[in-house]
Image (cartoon, rainbow, N blue to C red; front, top):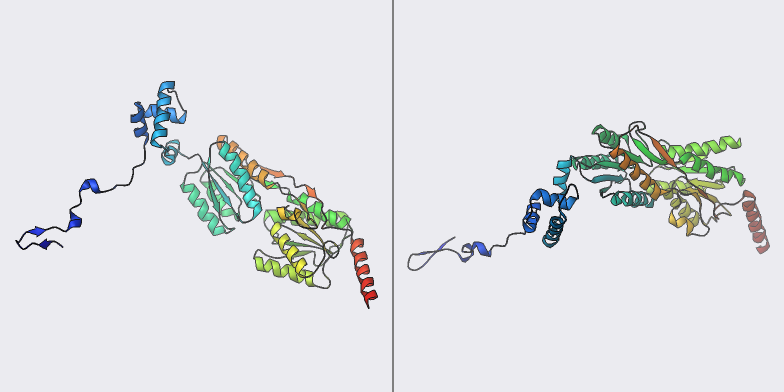
Length: 375
């Protein structure tokens, strides 16, 4: 509010008498026009010099590049995408970056795409179908050139393909025939692990798996059953334990199985998360691996070769899985074609967590003999 002097004159408050020169405005973004003015060329010449598309005289190009560097010019990706109708950007939607498998898939895909000049929009959808749909809508709004997805439901894949955006499903497949997919050979890998246990004489084997509906676990379950069938052996009643996806439920289900006096002689963990639960619960219960329990797992996580004994497993080529999917996406963006499914092999790695059943029996007899001598 203005004050009145003794002479009756109105005196404005000091904060209202700030000159325009004293106001600090935020710096404006350097534009292509600024670069062109500094270099003394037209905007079209500056654009050709910066993008490499079209001819620009060497001297003019040198001036443009120097001006861009001096001004700190950064191209407007949104403007370029509007002109080209899509951006040099790819959406990469994965289920859980805390899981080393998905982090490796993302790393493999990113290395290939970056070499080709693409920017990656990486989203961790936490394995939620709702989060996955929200992420799919977001990358579509960004006018991405293509999408790589580890799907948890068919909805996001269908939304992306309906919008005409090239899509590669990774690890899991929900839309066969509608888009490409890059998977691992889950059936063969699981069959090899089961054959290994059967070959060691184990007949009471339990596969611990989250569920058997998705293509990943369905394939591993199928390979497990194939090995039993090929061996001509009757499966025990507890041959498959469905443990769900909740971490506590996985731990509790595993603990209940291993604490039973009629526990299996061997366990097949269907993924690295379940494998961690088996290792922890076996240690908590004082079960020795492989003397008391032989143990195999699908997916060779780093810790499996660091523990003693090491865990027998089949290795998923997770980095190559992401890289292969990225290369296929680049091909699809350049030249659309009929969808196809590719599968990568998972080599068997035998370590110390498995042993012949007779070895376990001998160990039990030896323990009983030692106990008897002590009495």
